[in-house]
Length: 384
Image (cartoon, rainbow, N blue to C red; front, side, top):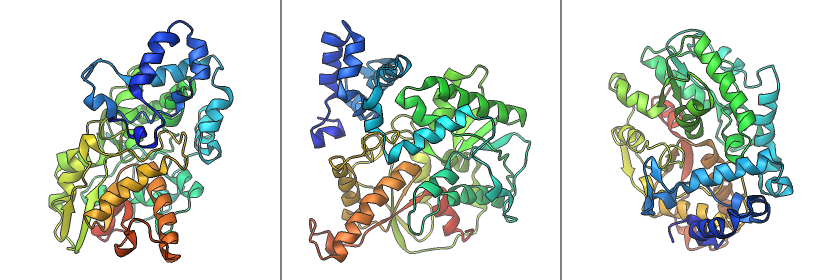
């Protein structure tokens, strides 16, 4: 019962594969149309950690099976209303990505970076920082005391503090959501555009902060784009490999923090230790682990902004409860979607507590805050 969706009794990887073998292979079109589980799967990869038939680079890969079936369904116009019913936030993220892929002008502009004199960036060079959709997400999701653009500002300021001036360009969405909903054609267009921009600027190393952007650049872009030979590093990996923190002046704070592994960076990207190595070395910070961590980390419950419903809220509730059990003041992560959906639950929980509703005795504890790694570090070093 490893699959987190078993907690809401909605999905069984074993049953899905059994049905695919028994009925799907005989009539694949009927299978993808009638099987609602196709869009329920979180593609979080947790099942593959435990399944004896799944091994690195070989064996059963349920995540890729799900994505391939979605691709077949999308390409053959079989998904229809089913996909639309499962897209969250009025499909705004998917529509944004599709618009990016089909329009010539760049939508993810970096004017907010260029207009900030405290940020140093360049148009050409070997080290590039991929912006992703931080600016769009900030406009779409209003989260008190949180700005998604601070993720980019914080990362760039930390690089600048160590005399690194990254290439930052007007790029497009990485295409993650389109790729995982099966629209590989438009995801490829986005990948080709972004790769060409970085190539033309002379970039050899691409740094990302968003977990999904990292996964796309590291593992998917080389499949979609010819000659995509960048060295791809997550921001935390770059900090550790370049030993950047040793040059910084510490500002000791007294707080307890924990780290949440995003699915794309952790289980699917195999980046577990760099964020922990950074956070555990900060003076004044008490670093704690939640019960489920690294490869066993919970998924926030919303993959590619698909199928966010009341039932899946239990996944976020369990994760927040783990952080509260260890007394964490902050949950640090590197996935904007995790920040959106955990904050959504925290907002609801805070409202209930204000209304004096007793929910599992949570009212006797303080609520943790969600924050991105680069934003947390930038605030720690008093950069933003």
